[in-house]
Amino acid sequence: MGRHKAIVLAITMLSAGILHSRPADAQTFQTYRCADGTQFIVGFYDGDKRAFLQIDGEPVTLAKRLTVSGARYSRAGITLTIGRTGTTTIRHLKRPVTACAVI
Image (cartoon, rainbow, N blue to C red; front, side, top):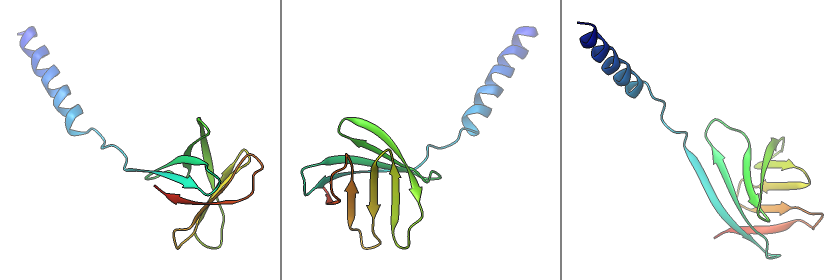
């Protein structure tokens, strides 16, 4: 009888875990190429206000900043700006602001 209870308990726990598993967060990744030759990948996750950037072979997490229109993210000398019209610019490594486009 003890073995039967153990099997029923194991099946119940497994089925409860499967039924109550949380779906993966939606995510968006885009690759950009800029006028100065810079190329980077940016990722956004639902429920997270940060931008996850891969630039110059290094990962950087940018915090969302206040802006009048569009979205602006910055940290560690890198500023990513995405306008309402879809125009995107980046400033990094003390270089001037550069226009970028999705590839």
